[in-house]
Length: 342
Image (cartoon, rainbow, N blue to C red; front, side, top):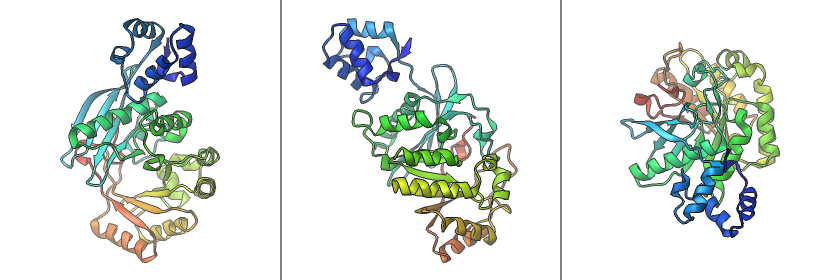
């Protein structure tokens, strides 16, 4: 049987009319599926029992469910979601005074094997479908409303997986999240983070997307980036600079560079100089300097506060718009790079 959420609105309307039902029934079903986020046909209470039964006989309505949630001392909530076929994937609610952000996953596992990231040590099982990504946002939004009394203000695709290797489903999920008959969230409040797939960054430009883009750089020369991010073999820094410029020319959307500091690896002032050179070649609004969060399988360490301060001061002196991003949810393995279904 077909997943009903994989039907277009037109296909749903055709199915309804073929059964001799009035046209507005299709709009009602569509509203239940997306705006009202029904997770079963039984939930669709303004439809006749007969129609709900027919829908159940012809379609499936698989939905993510929360398997378990962990609550950090700093207010961060990490949830493990279960898929219809028994896989687990994680998402995080990151609350601050100003905003409530959902960090969502796009794949179950990851194929990129970045050396500092817990998900990189897990085999990629499959891509998440657009409706599963949508469910992540819905469930995290419900948590935000329940715990903090506020809706989500932002979404970042910085969870498990590489979003640009699940291109069509990520874009379709964002279309549904930002649609008026979906969650109605502005695409300007959505950021997609990529480890750097140059060809797909250009495709984002060709497709005139309206969301923000973040590049996980983490090393400012090819030799070092190759050591920690195998994707650099086929997507070197020069090709990424070119792709980011292409993307910006096409969309004028905000770009952020992300850079995790690793002790005695990429935290010297020479490294800062190389980062500044890249910053001056791309139209980036911001460089996010990220605290490293240790994981079991990696040899990296976090630099001392003194080294971190010196690195930040050097960037500031050279007029780089940089921000130090303090980690949230470390005590529950919910911080950047720690998602691994523990």
